Image 1 (cartoon, helix red, strand yellow):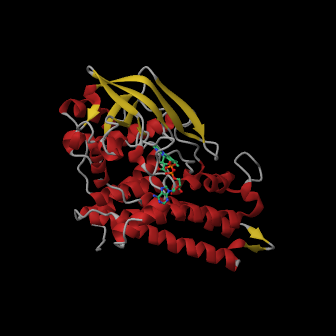
Image 2: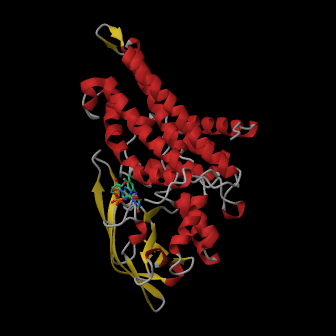
Image 3: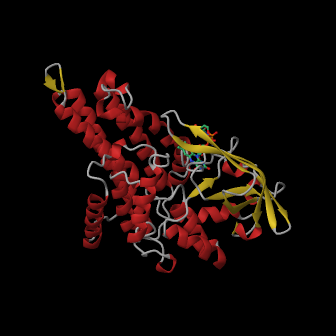
Length: 395
Ligand SMILES: Cc1cc2nc3c(=O)[nH]c(=O)nc-3n(C[C@H](O)[C@H](O)[C@H](O)COP(=O)(O)OP(=O)(O)OC[C@H]3O[C@@H](n4cnc5c(N)ncnc54)[C@H](O)[C@@H]3O)c2cc1C
């Protein structure tokens, strides 16, 4: 690996930072924002997405013909790092719009599908959700049971999805459904674009243990999807999905947000006295903070390694899993360190006058639990590293 940011990449980072200083409110505190898709926050989330779209940054890596700027993988990495460090909402228009819906459409979509769906993403006009997981299918996604049965010019969808992030605000859904129940499980899945306003779609909220409504259950009761909304070939959905993996997936956001939290904890330790001395002089506190600092650097470099491999047209496999695994477990460790440093009052939530850092660490402790589950659990990542990184046999 040979990573050195070019002058252009350094200048781009500075441009992003200046833009954010100009555009974010003066009192912007990235650690104390509510859920970006809550009724209170959504207008701001959308306003930021509009501004990013105006700059052309929302889809900065897309080819110019689809409203992008054809920026490099390293520039995308810089962009993601800064956006996460500053806690900017609205960067993926719900879930997956920019990450995989657009990229997969560019490769596997028809011309009609591209012209209907790519411009509204580049212009921040359309929000998406991703409808993969089901109550009985998560890690083993290929076992999914939601059915899509051909009926004339439509498919009829029946079944249930769960953990659908941003399903309650999405205009469109990116749906994986079974079109051939008799085929081996990976070979009977197709991919559809679903108008979330279609008759028969019911979205029910799930509130997580941090008190946020981010994900949902989604039910389909004889929902008609026009056959023109099938993406790629029927029954080849699993393979169509896999192409999205070739896009930026460095995981640089984990170290960026951990870095922001660590800076806040360091400041707190300097400003807070316990037993007549600043916390920053307590050797246990100092050592914990130092350990997290090292891990943040490791996480950052693991993600740069993934980005660099992609920039060299290599396919990071075990490396992407290492970055995801290390980064998400780091998020939980930083939260736990915060809890240790804050002490008993660290458990108080926002709104309590005694809650240190406005209850941020308490929320992080609760919300970070899910980070090692979402987008592939830690067990699954370790298994990938064992097989593809170490060449161990399939368990
Ligand atoms: C915050 C969050 C947001 C999400 N957003 C979305 C979304 O927008 N759209 C969507 O479709 N899904 C979403 N998900 C769902 C997510 O993809 C699944 O939760 C995840 O894939 C795990 O599946 P599961 O919950 O069914 O757990 P399971 O697969 O049932 O796993 C349960 C436990 O068994 C372990 N396990 C399973 N298989 C193996 C194995 N082969 N070897 C070793 N251990 C194993 C797992 O590691 C885990 O500890 C989200 C989840 C979270 C937490």
